[in-house]
Image 1 (tube, rainbow, N blue to C red):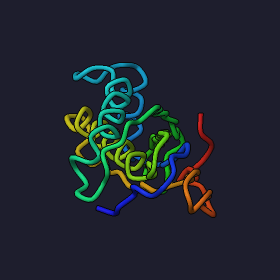
Image 2 (cartoon, rainbow, N blue to C red; image 1 turned 135 degrees about the vertical axis):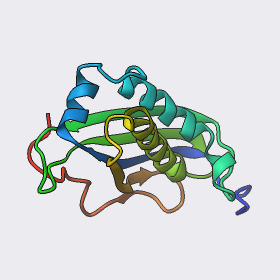
Image 3 (cartoon, rainbow, N blue to C red; image 1 turned 180 degrees about the vertical axis):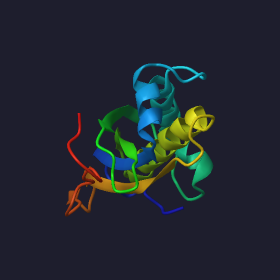
Length: 160
């Protein structure tokens, strides 16, 4: 692990995005609460928070951090793309006040939420996929602010 003992504590914020692609009927079932395992987005939200909190258990060189906030948001992308798939965009915002950043926690939150959506819906749509997990922005610390040149845009059509 990197020695951060000489670094000062600052507020650290990281935002990450990702996308889960699925058949339109799968997204409709999620929206209507018709997935047998339960409320998909509520469970994925809890999973994302848990993923952020457990990042140092999953990523070997990450410092254990006292997170002050983890927020997981979802946005439905209703218009099918050229493959006939709709998607859900996941956004995680993670905050701490400490000596090292929370970028990995934000990306782990997104990936964990995406895996949970897949797990809960695989009985109706084994062809789902997820990806585009990336750091969108971060602030705080010696390196200052980072803003991705292009934010994750919907793969297709307007979002609702």
